Amino acid sequence: MNSPLILLAAIAVAASLADAQSPAAQTSIALDGNQVSIRYSAPSVRGRKIFGAGGLLSQDPTYPAWRAGANSATALHTGADLDIGGLRVPKGDYTLYVWIADPDNWQLIISKETGQWGLTYNPKMDLGRVKMTMSKPPALIETYKMTLSSTGPKSGKLQLEWENHVASVPIAAK
Picture 1 (cartoon, rainbow, N blue to C red):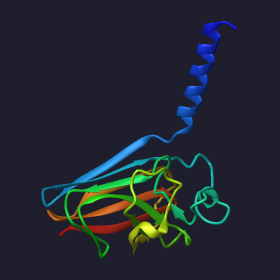
Picture 2 (spheres, rainbow, N blue to C red):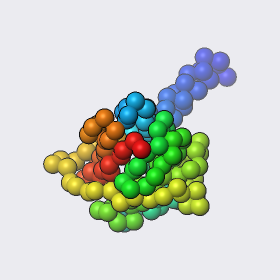
Picture 3 (cartoon, helix red, strand yellow):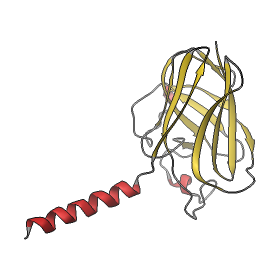
Picture 4 (tube, one colour):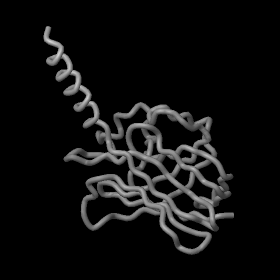
């Protein structure tokens, strides 16, 4: 077989695999002079049902725990001790998941396990869970987005938006 044809076939396969991956994204904020950052992958709706029975996420082996993104697990790094929705989170590295058994009442899960692929949730590694405040966007949110925003020098908000859901939780440096 011709070597250039093999090379072209390999490039085509690699390109299709890259297209299957959701793009990397990140959000960060400084709280009381300390960096808080989240790295995640941002999937898109692309005409699919996402949440609830029969939705895309209900097919994940970790359902109803969702990896709060796509691809690798969503990573939280904090340079400060935090209060996230009433849960004390010591400075360090964590993985974020969301409990979506009820698509209209989410719980943010902070896991002490880090570095895993997104579909390997272990509930024994939970630091804790907090209820999120839910709302509906004015229009469908095609691409998943996480945002850390400031509400003061030591306080902020984490917001997750996708499909027909917006979930938020307050955060504060302690």
